[in-house]
Picture 1: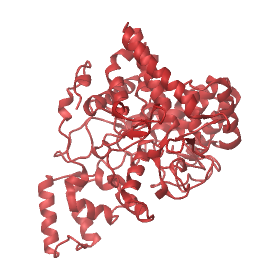
Picture 2: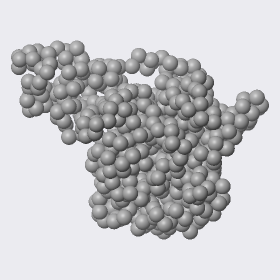
Picture 3: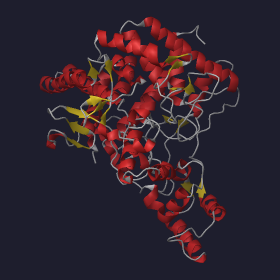
Picture 4: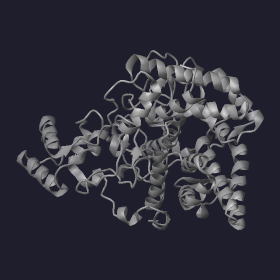
Length: 532
């Protein structure tokens, strides 16, 4: 475990404080975990793994063993009915961490005021681990959670949340969010999906360098120097194992193509059902004759992508069991890796580190060359995700194509084709659809998501496509405002095809809150004050 990076930061606690992690919920609660999760005792599998025990784990497990013994033993078949099991849980666990409330004491007429008040409601303070048995990973600074069932920090959400914090004048929380992210990198070598023990085996789209960039806009470029150790540590996490790869091989998140090119994919270090979606993953694997471990590995990798889930990852867009995330080199992830390498090179250059700057710049240049060769089809005139076993782009048409524009990687002619495709295939009355296929997955039509709207708008503007960018912005703002006027809520995602209808698909109901929706909307309304 790396401790030196975070420990060297001014004001940051020594990461040895979190070196000894509590066990995962499945290991901590054993048979109790399996009985609760496999039976679907709670409608949301995430509920139990977020509950906090009110007694020591050993005492709870001894009580459960005694309960099972009184009912004749529970090794092979359920011996306790669901009502008795629920009573057992409710008597020994609290739900104080399972949901983030998003109802202000007083309703605000203006949506910006509503968002400004929500920041405090969605802020969590560092707190102890509750007998060492909470799944929550402690953080040194206050942080924003998305809302609803998402009552912990989420990695790529944080960047888009920070956009709104900036407009709300909450620079203090922006610094806290970045310090927390740096702390996680120092403590665990990467940024987990979220600050829960069951998220430690995977990350999410690596936006840390972009988060630091937002702070640099507030102060100056010296901010990058402060977080350089963490930026480098994160890059190496994504490249772990690259030295030993032969052409055509992959290890964890790193893939070496047949010509020697190094690029990245999503991965999870576990190959079991997700603890926070245990029953759902068991059911998905049971619907297909495919090897269950292979399905679970790909589901977990899909969760790392942040697009959980999308036809983007599926062989059959209507069958989650056909998921193949680890066979795909994602367009967005490899944009972010290029941005990371470029940012690190620039930081070394400003610090006068010529040798390091040159080495990182060579890495960034190699990535840029590979990016245009691998992720762009001259024949189809489009960007896409790359099936590295098949040496071709996937067939999926989705909004991930905005990433090369947002990070300035696309050429002008490529940006023109992206703009045309977006307008023809993804633009709807409420904003951009995530994909052009309507499935039961939430990262597909008819849904639109705040981060993709922001990146599309700013990316299109970067390449001079102002009219289309303005159209997307105004439509998205109107969608948010209309729902707010009807329900006084801001949602995780929206139906952009029929803005009066609810969003569709997903493993759970659409959540209220909502961190990155609030952040993007607050930032857009500052730029389009007459929209809505």
